[in-house]
Picture 1 (cartoon, one colour):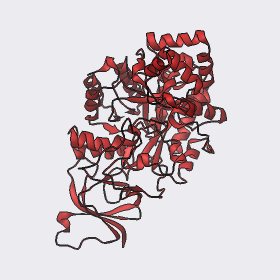
Picture 2 (cartoon, rainbow, N blue to C red):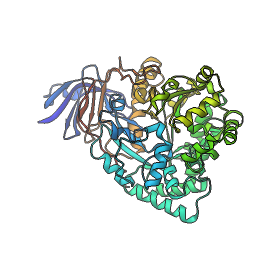
Picture 3 (spheres, helix red, strand yellow):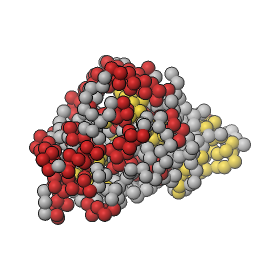
Picture 4 (cartoon, helix red, strand yellow):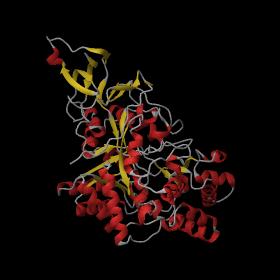
Length: 536
C-alpha cells in the first residue's frame, strides 16, 4: 500500500488553474496519483497506510521563499518554525551579495562581521566549509526545509579583490569568473549582488556583466539588490535590465519595492518598464514581501566610502570625530548611497535587534526617540550604537507605500520572498508571516489576488525560475513538498509587537512526503536538503 492518501482536498495546483477536489496519493516522497472527485465517482477510492481527511482544506505545493536570510539559521535551529510553520518548503539563500561561500579564512571573518545584524556572528556554528559545494553538503546533513543557494558577488569580490573601492584587474576578473563557474557546477542556482552594500557595490557594470555571462552558460539567474530603491530607483532597475540583456542572463529582481517619499505612487512606472522589457524578450521575474517597512542593518545606511577596507575600517572611521562628521553629512544632508540617495529620516529608523544584550533598551525605538531620551542628536545615538555593538544593530526602515506594494504584487512575473531576518529581539514580522499574510490579507480580505493566482506566485512560478523539474506543482511524479491550509482562517500571527508569533490556519506541511508540521505542531523531522541547480 502507498504511504499516505490526502482525502477530499481542494487542490490548488500552483499553475494558476481553477481548483478541484481530489484524493492525492503519496508514496516514496512523491505524488503517485491524483484521483479527482469526478473520476472517483463509481470507482474504488485509493487506499494507503495512512489517510488524512482534508475536508475544508486547500492542498497546494509547498511555498518557495525566493529571498531568505536563513543561511546560518538552518544550521543553528533544527526547529526553524519561522519558515516551516508558514508552509515554506524551500528557501533561496546567499542573498544580497553576502553569504558564507566561497571564502577563505580571512574573507569568512570579514563577512561574518559585515552581516552580524542579519545572521548573528555565528559563534555557535562550526564553519567547516569553504566552497559552495561544501556548504551545500553541510545542508545535506539534514535541515528543517529545503534550500537553494546563490553565489554572493560581494563575498566573491571580498575573496578575490578585497574590500577596496577599485576595479578588478584582468587576473582578478578571471579568478571571479572561475569561482562563479565552480559554484554553478557545484549546484548554485545563480548569482546575487548587494549593490548598496560593500564590497559588492564597488563593482562596475562591466564586471557584473562578465560574471552574469558565466551564470547564463549554466542556465542560472542574476538576483541583484540593485543600486537604489530610493532616489534613482527606476534608473537602477533599468540598469539591471540592460546589464542582463547584454549578458544574455535571466534576471530576478530582489525585493522589488519602490520606497521612500520620492517614489510614492510610482509603482506603475516600474511595471511599465518591466512590461516593455518583457515584450522585447527579456527573461525577468521579481519577488516582494507583503509589508511596507524594509529591514536591514544600521551599518548598511553608511556611505560606501566609509565601508572601504571592511568592518574594522568602518569602526575606525566612526571612532574618529572628523571622519564621523563626514559620515553624518552624507547621511543627513547629501543622501548616502547606502541609504539609496535619500537623506536619512531618523524617525523612520527603528532598531529591531542588537547583538549585545546590554544595549537592549534601544530595541523597539526609533533612533530619533532614543536620541530624545538621551538628550543628544540622532546621529550621536546612531554612531554610539554602531560602535558599542560593533556594527551589529538591525533596523526596520518605515519607508514603504501600500499602493506600491499592491501594484507590484499583481504583476505576472511576481513571486513571494520574505527577506526574513531572524536575528534580533524584535525582527520584522515578515520573517514569520509573509506567506500566510499573502493568503489571508491580500487574497481573502483585500481580494488583490485570487487564491489560485496567489498560490501560483508562491509555488509554480518560483519553481520555474529555479528550473526545478519536479517541484512547485501538484502533479503526479512530483515531489511531495506540500502544504494544507484553511482558506477561511489562514493568517499571519506575527505583528510588529509580537514578530515571532506563528501563523494560524496551516495545520499540515510535508517535505518529501514527511510531515514537518502535523496538526499545527512542528515534528522532529529534518527532511530538508540542498536543492542543486538542474543540469541544462
